[in-house]
Image 1 (cartoon, rainbow, N blue to C red):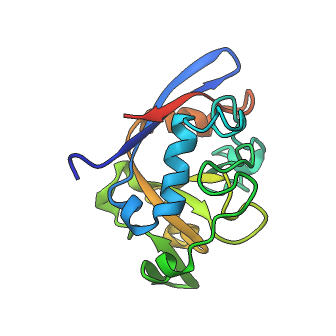
Image 2: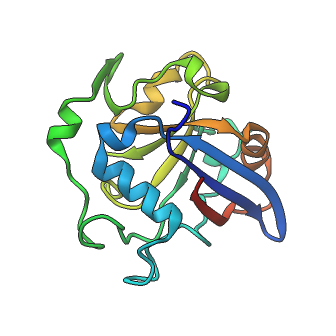
Length: 195
């Protein structure tokens, strides 16, 4: 996976820069070409000339006690909805790729997840990047950073239910910890791209 595509997000809270998260997408562009392709193009912003909302810069992660580590309702994931304009297909149409999804289904206790197969060894602290496949934000610009490896035993892979794993955290776990533990406000993407 040396030449696998990598994407990055530079994160800030208010005026304070937290640093960079780097995700290795491994072969997700082969496994789920439309979902992974959309993620990469939203990171690079290469479709912004068609629609300025086709990108992640200035997008905020959700911020409430559910998303702050240390609160009892913390969910071990950080969700960013994006601007709702896809960079693959028509901007306002949801991405749907049932054939590819069928070929990368993984059964776990309580249901299934899709995409790359999760393993603790694949990433720093077992952190993955996922996109939702059910609910209001499916097939759109939303993604989640999910802390599978660090989550309590009763969560673990169940955090991946009904979503697709597109990448593994390669560097920036200290940035993620800071993002997860701060209470000042919503973390914002100030830059993103493909490495």
